[in-house]
Structure formats: C-alpha cells, structure tokens
Amino acid sequence: MPSTEYGEFRLQRQKGGVGYFGQVRVRVVPGPADVVWTAPPEDRTSLQPREDAEFVEAALDGARDGVELVRSLGVDVGERVEVVHAQLDLKDIEESAVSAAAALAVGEAFGVADRLVLDFRDGWFVRTA
Image 1 (cartoon, rainbow, N blue to C red):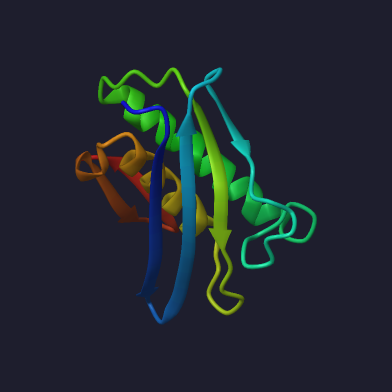
Image 2 (cartoon, rainbow, N blue to C red):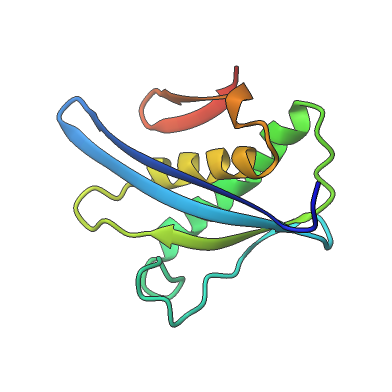
C-alpha cells in the first residue's frame, strides 16, 4: 500500500419516509495503529467535536468498526486511520449513517469496499459480504 490512501463514502437514503445522511473521508497514513480525528477546526464544512460531539464520535466508532471489518478480511491494518472530514447535512444527518459511512470509507481506503455491504436494521451498519 502506498504511504497515504484516502477513502470516502456518502450515505444518503430514504427509509420508511425518514432521510438518512452521513459522509466521511478518511486517510490512512504510516504510524501506530489507531483511529483519530484530524479534521481541521477551521473547516466549517465538516463536523467538529465541540459542536457536533455525538456525530464525531459516530464517525470515529464507524472508522474503528471499519478497521475491524477490514482486518476480518485478512488485510494487515497496521497503520493510522485519520478521519479528515465528515460532511454535515442538518436536515438528515443521523448517527448510524455517519458511522456506516466511516466504516465504508475505511474499506475503500484499504481496497476492500467491494467486500463490504451496507445494511439497515433499526439503523445503518456495515458487514462483510
């Protein structure tokens, strides 16, 4: 894998008349295996920990889940995953959508997005195909 890989996923769906939105971009860089938030505080187009704590945590949790899913597919995940941007849509943003988008962004960054499946059961989640 090259020294830096990016992955991004945008989930925008209607389910039972309810809108769901989540968009997350991650970067995989050399370093200790970890998942961290690195969106610049001045980026007003991204979620931010101070104002959007529950959605930032959903993005981090989803990225961690994505790492575990990627690892379960036999991929060496010995690098740092940085959440560099999480898009905001005030009308339809939802924690499970943000979390699932982060997991799928991680899958894309590691080249295994085609082996992951987005699913819905009382919220969005990602599983292996």
